[in-house]
Length: 58
Image (tube, rainbow, N blue to C red):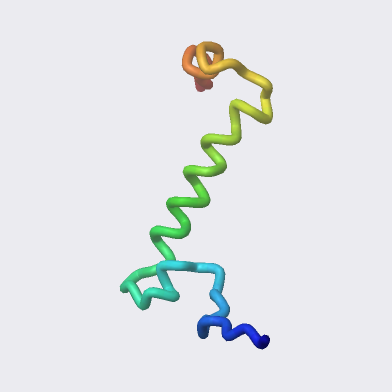
């Protein structure tokens, strides 16, 4: 018995562009930035409390 698979499109890697949304680069840039911010305390092996109390002073 042969299977029939639904048709699909290959993603460009930017779901916002795939949906033809205007200015699709901005939301993906924000998502990448948010991911980097979320990973920063993990890379420094900080607890939530330590990350909250840490800030850089100029």
